[in-house]
Image (tube, rainbow, N blue to C red; front, top):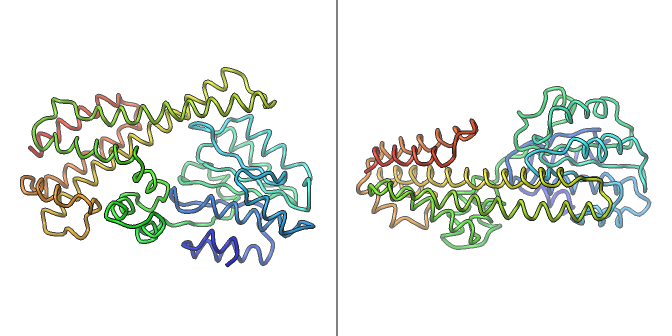
Length: 362
């Protein structure tokens, strides 16, 4: 099995499209689009390795170096957002201007932009000229879990390669065995990275917090503010990422990358906020899924429950909650989660949500 075949083992459409491109002449720009955890990153690295290797004097050595993460190969540029958005100057320097320079080795250069939806409009507009008139040796790969966030002018100049969410059965094989693994594979919604998170201490605590919130609503104990656990978990995760991002950027500054103290602080804070939001949204999703599982158990459809390692607990709660109330509760959670996009107070949103759930469920 080739490197590309291995990286796209569970993505048949992407494998066919990328293999055909390598057999002919790769396009100057691609948009790898699909949900998080679907393998876009691994496929991009494998594809870049084959493109660069095909034009190298020593293909095996070039391929080996490109596949390293981080890669030391000078003709692979990999750009990932440090925070909520890509920094405009970093995009200009490392992609737009760098794409004009000939390869350091061999005959090809590849530029990968991870999280392309985090490109500001200014950066996307600046990319247009590179996408419209690229040098023959340059290839761009944009990775996006939210391609709708890209400007149409950018997306239309890239050849799309679609990635689907991974089936729960595939995640189970990757994650291991046991009831907890099976539950995590279903709760992850096709995202392998999320599945691994749910099996970590952080993920287990988050699941417990979500279950505690729903149980409090059912038992009429919302006044105890059980949602504080979700907020604390999100804040802790955000603080950890902010500190790690700050440290990485400061190291880069010491190594000679031009970046001011304010830029470092702002980028670190954006990264922290992004992680905080991700964890809080996952907490909301876990609450909604628990309520959907309650409805399923209540109508005798335990086989479709995602929290299959918690069936006894679900059965106990389902005995006191009407299935239609549980389904409506799941809808309320989803509505509240979407409301976070409007920058409402997270704590007030959680408080209002769980008092509404208590009125519905208790």
